[in-house]
Image (cartoon, rainbow, N blue to C red):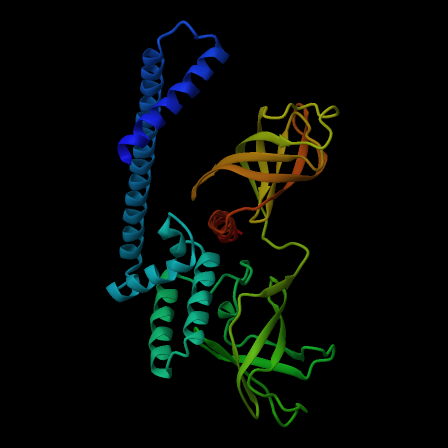
Length: 375
């Protein structure tokens, strides 16, 4: 049967090839020559594809090797034990990144991974002893990484960042008037935190495990917060609730802003009215950063963009070089210089990675502390 099929397949290929040759005008060329050329071209394409794939694989391996080295150096620098380092690697399962050291640099990434890990343990109904072991391990990592206490200028990312002694009010899910006027955070671990109130002064209806509550509080020099929490345990004067990363913050200015004078390069990515824009899309401009925060920056330039334009900016800070950060131009004003007038653009970061935002915020805080020392 196989001997019969092979000649039929060859005849079919030959007929198709001859038809193709007649269409492209190669009727005079021998079929064997054309087939040979096609085979060589196909082989060349395959070889080039294999070379490309191998090169990309080698680049990826090099990137992973560098990332692993940076991760190991970061773990050694902050003094993580072997078990703590192993736990951090487990946390990284919850974050798709090729740069594992990010979890030790970004509080946002760290809290996201811890939240996912705790939820997984609770879903698996981990016994109390295991939860206590995990709590001790995660708490030790948090302390060594430096995420135990966030500066007042840094917005809270998780209820795990709430300081002991923080006072606030407790609301029911459908209540606009607080059911507890004053409650204070008196304990916390990686799984829960405890609110204490004066049971003799507060007229509280029965709170049962599983109930949903809202804890609202004001953080000094920061903003107003509201967090939806789930009750784990409740007793007279005590409410133990589960942590959450669903933290709602209300303040006009989210990030501390500081004045600087740093060179900036930017490129126009998108404009709503290309005909009215004096800057071509893709054109690179230079300017000076006038102030910066974790939410955006303002910069001076001799030429004006338009409100709503999307630009890509690049600049350098002591904490690193930032390139290709997308920004949206919010508004534009004028600022008089010594010899000329500049356009001052106020821009907001768009889709900024948590790691990069944290690095900018850290620079702003460090700079602010340095300035305060000279006052």
